[in-house]
Image (cartoon, rainbow, N blue to C red; front, side, top):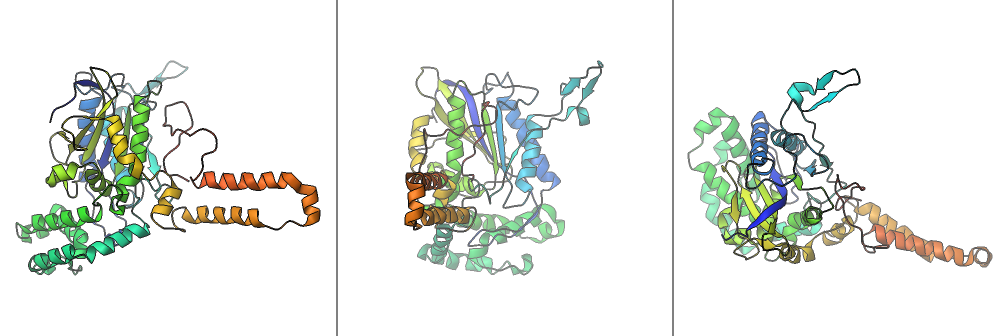
Length: 447
């Protein structure tokens, strides 16, 4: 592709976790059992961190971000968040290993005490990098698909579609060969993610299984799982509920862009550690998958997307460059997106995704038609209480004493509730801020 001639000024990174042990996902709701990361997974993330360091924190690299600290971690320049749900602590643990590759041990991580002695951090200068652990029960932005009733309906409709039935018929001969390799697991196209994951995990970690599995079976299962998951986590338009994983995460991406292009904000890098689902939705929403069918599937362990924010040499508004590294790929590949043949103007990205972004918990509750889970119950109760307060009868005596004062209290309560629900903004529009901006942090979609 053609690229804009300009200097990088910051980057937004989305990173999938590393290798882990197997786990089960419900084929309709995608609720999952717990699992754990492996030493291989930690190593994959550490190596990815080292690669990212060589690009963005190395002054001799053409992608070095000017002003970024190259040795010691500078909290004012970086904001990191990791999904704490889904696969239990795997994503967070992966992120820890990633940060150790980005900011490795150094003897410069030391302090000189009042008595003149110098103390180096343990393990030769280990750097403790703060990571915001995102609890999906309190923040829907990284797992927008869970407990989303309209998404579950979308998934069920996909399973009942003629397209799915046709694929089920075509894949039946292959699936009928799998029982000896699946230890009693359900053999059905609806369960294709779990079939593939079991085979993939055992092919990596179980020598007996790997030797017994016919050479083409894993790739056949992977192809079916790719087709299955892409159709579940995408839609025919950006507003389709199948894209909810992407719709929920884009507000934080846009906010990071805002922080990077703000010359008074020291933040230059945001890292978000996630599962594979948001990748699928974002590839669909930005046209990446349509232009590159090989990306219409599950990204590998330790994959990364880099939205590079660049300032064109000729001036004008910043542009976004889309880079993707699929797991064991040696380096990033730059892809066209949003139907363009060069880096996309920041405004073009915002125009494409802002109209469908799920910006608040209340917005998510509405889109997902949920009135009780993940904070929706508290919002529903608050609205009911405000409504009841506004309708409560007042006796003539009480009215004489309270008069206009009570009216103001009720109005304030109603306005406060609407603001809490994300339906009304009191005063000027608030701006989300990131650690290091010198102001209180706000994170999209938290209660």
